Length: 457
Image (cartoon, rainbow, N blue to C red; front, side, top):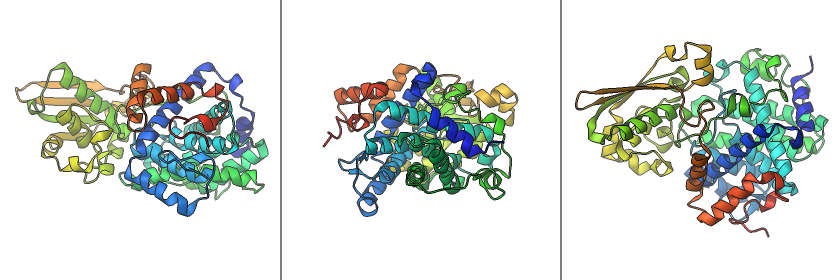
C-alpha cells in the first residue's frame, strides 16, 4: 500500500482550482467567509488578546496580518493568534468527518503563508481546499471512537490539515509536502479534557501554527518519517490503536466540503447546543411565550451532545459555551443567544440563573437508531417545554439550521458575518471585505484582503 503521507501529498501537490467542482469551491468560500467573520469577532476574547500580547516577545515581525492588530508578524505567530481568535467564541464551523473544527485551523495557516509570500487569492483558495479536505479525509479513515476516547480531534487532525494547506500555499513539491504532512502528524495532539477552558481555543491556534511550522521545515529541506502514519509507533497506532480505513481516504474523489458538508453555527457555543437552543427559540416565538410562562425545559440528546456538554452549572464564560442550561437559559431570558451574551457578569444575573435551573438534559441513544440518523442527526435533540398553564410543547429537531442536511441560507450567513464584524468595521468596509472574500479567486494579492482594517504598507 502507498504510505498515507504519500497519498495525501500526491493529491495536495497536484490540486488545481480550475479542476475542482464548482460546488466545492462555493462551499470553501462560505467556510472562509464564516471563519474570517467569527475570527474578527473573536479578537476581543481574553484568550485571543493574551496570545496577541505575547507575539512581540516570541515572534519576529513579518508580512502576515494578525487580526485585531495593525502590526504584521511572522507566519507562525499570525497563525497562532488568528487560529486562536477563530475558535475563541466557539462560533466556527464543524465537520462531522472526524468531528473537527477544520476551517479555524486551516484558514489562518494558509492565509499567514499566503500573505508572507504575497501570493494571489487563487493560490490561497486552492490551499484552503487542500488542507480541509486532507483533514476531513483522515477523519473519515479514523474510527469515531478516537473522539470518544478523549482525543480532541480538532487539534489532532487540524495540525495535519493546516500543514497540507500551508505546504500548498508555499508552493511545495510533492516530496516536501509529504515531509510537511509527516512533520505535523508527528506533533499532532489535543485532549478533550481542555473543553471549557482557555486551553481549547489556544490549542486550535497551536494546530494552525504547527501546520505552518511543519511546512516551513519541509520548505527548508528537513525530513520527517515516510511512515509517520503506518509505523508501529506512529500516528494510527497511538491515536486509534491501529484502526484505520485507508479506503475511506478517497482524496480527490470525495469532497467532504459537500459530502457530507460542513455545519455552520447559529449560536456562539458548542455545536452540541445548537439544535436544542434553536428549538426553544422557535417555540418561544411561535407560542408568544414570556420567560415566566416556562416552568421547565427537558432536552433528550444524542451521545455526542451528552459527552460534549459537561457543565450544568458553569462558572466561567468558557464553561458556559459547553452548557445546555446556559444556552437555553439565554434563549429563555433574553430571547437570543449571541456573542455579547458571553459575558462574565451574566453568569451572576439572577434572571439567567433562574432560567438555567429550569433546564435539564438526558442522553437518549435511541435518537441515533438508524444509519441515516447517525449521519444526518449527530447532535439532534428532542425538546420538551413545560408551561405554567399545564401545556407541554414537544419538538424533535434532528438538525439545527446550519447543519449539512439543513443548510444555513445565504442571507443568514451574510447577517452572521456582518454582525461578527460590526465592532471592527463600518457596514461599508464589511461589505467590501465580504466582496473580496467571495471573489478570493480573482484577488491579485492576499495582502490586500484586509485593506479596510489595515492598509498595505
